[in-house]
Amino acid sequence: MDEAGNIVGTYYIKPNQSSLGAQVCNCGYIAGENARGKGVATEMCKHSQREVVSQGFRAMQYNLVVSTNEKAFQLWKKPGVDLVDTLPGAFRHGQFGNADAFVMYKQLVT
Image (cartoon, rainbow, N blue to C red; front, side, top):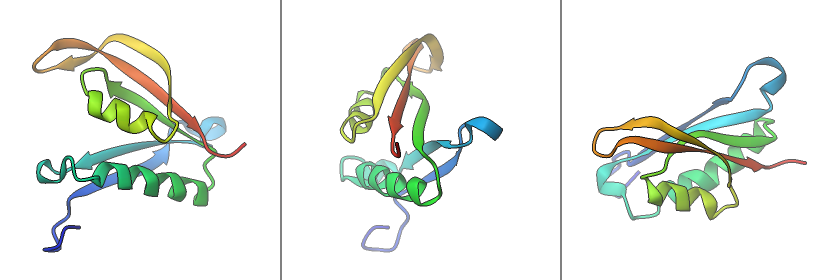
């Protein structure tokens, strides 16, 4: 929340797969337009990593980081989230057409 009590960002945590793959979570983040560049997404990423461990997840996977979103890609790389694969043309971007999407992964508990 900002100084006025407005919500500036949110995220979700859910199992990335059911059953035998449920120890890996998937998270999605949204930061408000007026919150960009103020560290909101960084703080949500830090908070979510602590939270997923407390919920029993062993790793985080980001299934679709759009290649044109350089800020998001760099944000996830800072805390050690690795690029594990590229999905060519997997995202229909409104401005850039078909864009590559990245799958990123971070082991949290060994």
